Every structure is written in C-alpha cells, then in structure tokens.
Length: 161
Ligand SMILES: [Zn+2]
Image (cartoon, rainbow, N blue to C red):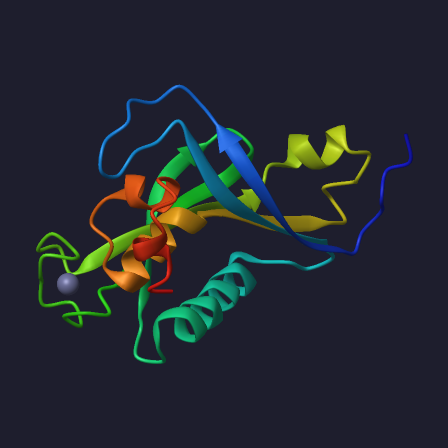
C-alpha cells in the first residue's frame, strides 16, 4: 500500500458504530468528522487556532473555546474541547446544563508512535488531529433536546431545517 507523505491536510466524514445504551444524548450510531494535519513545525497552537476559527464560524464570533486535558490512545497530549454556551454566553442555562460550556470534540497532537507506524519520522514531522460528533454539534446549535429525533425520520421534525 502506498502511504501518503506529509504535508497532509485531511478532513474526513464517517459514521461510527459502538456499543452504547440509547438515551437522549447517546446512541450506538453517530456521525463524526475527523481532521488531521501532519507537517513540519505543526504545534498545538495551530490546533487551537483551527478550532477557534471553526467555533466562530459555526456558533458565532463571540464563541470561546477551552481545552481540558484528557486521554486518547493515538494523541499525546490530548484534550477535550468545550465551547462557551452560545445561548447564555457562559452564564449557565438549560442548553449548557448550567455549566456555561458545551463539549463538542476531542483532539490532540498525533502520537509519535502513530507517525512512526505510518513511516513518517516524528523527529521531522508533527501533527494534530480532532474528531467532532456532528450530531452533538447539531443538537447544540439548534437546541435539540433528544438525539433520537435526528434518526426517527419524522418529516415534520426534519423539515424545520
Ligand atoms: Zn448556556
């Protein structure tokens, strides 16, 4: 198999299946957008700036983001990313469950072993990656309380968008 060499800049949509109990915010099937950048000199600052631009475009220019340290097996360091609530501006409301923040994605710097496994020298190249749940973002943006509405094919619900 031919492996693409850096620089790599990819955004890839996908459908995820996993074992999970169905409730208002969880489903064993959901949609995800993965982003990956690998190049010389890529830093976490570039990751943060990319996500700040995304948040401003998707939720409005006043939107702030915050990183919370987390563990993912293929990135180091890793973080979960929240946006400031676009309904209450961070004061706390029913959409953000009083937190002022809404979790939208996971991200991090590509682990050196992942680069090595792809035949890319981690002493020369670095990368960042993120994965965001499209369904959660739609729920947050439109204030949809129950994830299951998105998959029930109720035309009266879907026509609102
Ligand atoms: Zn809020």
